[in-house]
Image 1 (tube, rainbow over the protein chains, first blue to last red):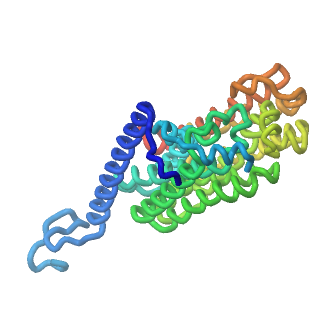
Image 2: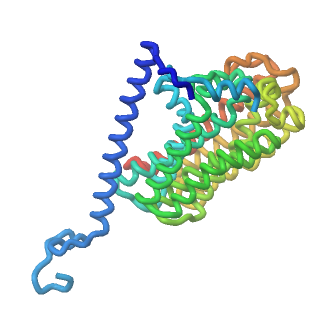
Image 3: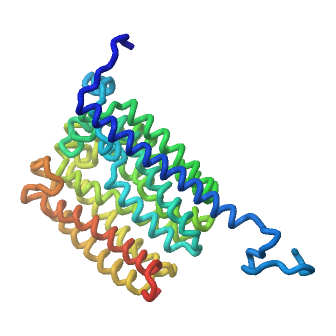
Length: 66
Length: 320
């Protein structure tokens, strides 16, 4: 590697800025997607003590599973 | 790898635009993969949550894009001498091979992990196998060695509807295997029709396509044989039940037209006179017109059968 500092031309600088914006947007979209998938998977698999997800109703005291 | 390719690998690529990185992922191939995967997902007897469905399609698309980037990194030397591919980002020196490799590997890992976490291990394993098959088995082992390269390598492009089906249901049955088989058998006549009138391009790059190795007559015969297998195979989903009456009609008519055009190619002298018009995908001399027509129709055929299948499953009110 050379010790000389790399000087980018204005066009290269603009191209790098555009790449950075696209990478930021892609990363944000990825984080949102992982969050959404996590919520959906949790909703599918976690059994709520207050809500019967299979029947879509609130659990009643004394019923099996409550 | 040639010296020119090594120079390109070492190129400083500060001016590469973000579109160059999108081009690395072969967006046209990605769009076909997304389309066939969506059909597999719609036809599967399970309805995943819309977020999961979106993730399945996205993971398969990104996985396909990753294999495209790995392919372009490895094939930069031959891409640079073919008219159709010489402007690709690595071949033209706008992106280095190392960058393309890194992008390909990172996206491969992300797409497989994402599909596995969102759905199941079978789907993730199938996606990983598809990427490995395209980037290593096809690109590194087969493409430069055998004229059967696209016959075997075509499996990678055929698997997306099977991956989507496995992601939605957790398993595989005869129906997704049929969808995969249709694309698998469709691929050779599609590419050989192109190779018949672009054989000069492939010969210059030293890629052993069937017309260069076995000659145009053997290629025309092979196209006909594959078309005779493809036509009844294309109708099969209507017999197993995933295709409805519209699918039956389109696959019957499309299959008959496919065989008709393949017969025309078999009787023509396509590929004999050497290729011209390398700059344009559809530009041919008169003798090669039959091959060009079959190439164009083959795209319409695959789009037609999968679009009808998708419509029958995804649109309300379409009889099944």
